[in-house]
Length: 299
Image 1 (cartoon, rainbow, N blue to C red):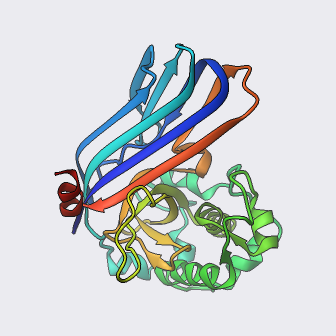
Image 2: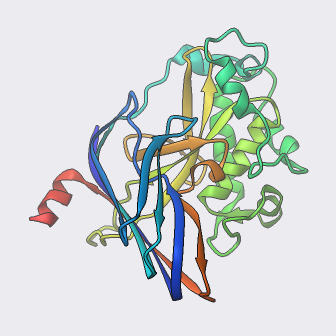
């Protein structure tokens, strides 16, 4: 079990006045059986004329805002106190053959909820080559836990992490061609692979607590948002969380913020602006610090 202070700041700057900003953000970790959220707070600067906190269709905390004061800088900041435990899975659920772990025709109580996550989505398209790539892991009768782990291992081995190879809008087909990408790309690829065979899996966004190199101090704000995926386990009515970027199951270093069909459902921040500005910059600062370290730093 680990307790973290999570800090996330997103700052937009513009070269001319913005007359109106409308946005929505997912930056608040969600309470879960393995994740306790003690406190959370968020702010928007300049002060919005309208701010509404709600829960979306997937149960994620979401905030909508509008800023009408003229501004050349928009900043959204969130702080949370979160305790995370490594998820536990029923061995019987992991041992179920993957073919019988598909929601179609399943008698599980939440099969109707899982069905949506077995369908193709805009950011996880079943591109040419996806079905065949997945088939090497989804062997006949293979346990669903073993199959999901094997797909995770293969993506980690076959694709290199390269932040210059893709953009936030890159397709699964592009990732397959480049054999490179970032966490978002690898999550979308794995989703497309599993869903092309009828397996339900959802995109998960959040944070991964990182450690500095030996002998080095942690640099505040040097962390980043992270993405992974979770595969439905009907025997347990649970979801197996796997991270192809780091070749491991999610543990107590993973802070879950939101989940959905793909990145578009849970992006940390999105919106529209009304302005004559011709250029803008985006800066993101994220810090996931063990609570004792964060408390010492704030003294």
